[in-house]
Image 1 (cartoon, rainbow, N blue to C red):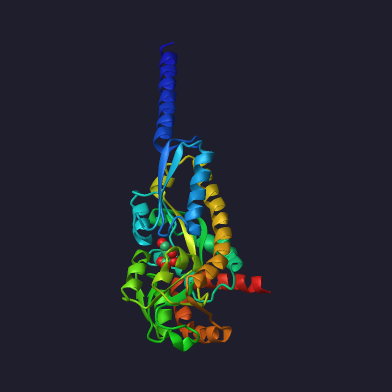
Image 2 (tube, helix red, strand yellow; image 1 turned 90 degrees about the vertical axis):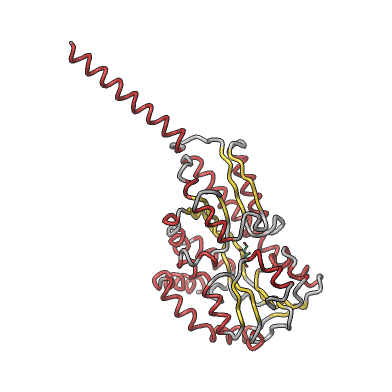
Length: 344
Ligand code: TK8
């Protein structure tokens, strides 16, 4: 009898302990389901009127709707919280929850992102979608958790074009001696060096002032950015080169992610993907509209012929060969094979 009693008491206290641990687990780490009151600080480098800004507003709308306002998204634009690298650092240390930087400045951290920085790699946005949303893009996202980051999906910055204050860029020779701001990315740096330009890497938040003060002659970015950031006020010439495609990557702090319940994680992931679809759609429309608007603003616009593109491609091939080896030849080959298949 005594023994039986002791066993019952033992069992009871053990199960109470387990119950206690479960509920503590839920309030501390989120558990498997349920939605809690949370606030997400989300910052980007571009303006709210830019397709990336519009898509961030869409992300906010979806998250707040699906969580009945329990999870709030506070939005910050125009590098208010810092540039791409600074915001990514803030995510790593857990003081900011979301940022959506260009992948290019992150190559110092995850070298494989550099595989997307090769000039003339993608022929269309659809090719970029296929690679980024496919195995190669996903394999690169898997490198992020070891840096305390979670990559939910890719958005689109897009194909880049060159502006400058000196002269139209119509031939491969026209790059010679041009002081051009590049992203903080070694592929871009070395490619422009090979083209005879004088590249200066700097954070995006410093570009307008650098152009205005003539610290640099030019810069390169997608048309929507050239318009949204009013670079036409300090740049006379726009050459439609489409020389390289830049993805955005939707990053979440892993410190924050790990606290979320499975239900909350699904809401975040779905919202990032859905807002990303919207981002790609409006970005592609904005490109067409922006070209017209930039002409209306008085920019001198010219195309860059396929013949000249081929000359540039030849100049920069050694840079691609060098970095493909450095960033991961297997992934590079997988990507080029996928692109060849798409082109058949
Ligand atoms: C915005 C940047 C920018 C990028 C650049 O944060 O740095 O030129 O194209 O748009 O990510």
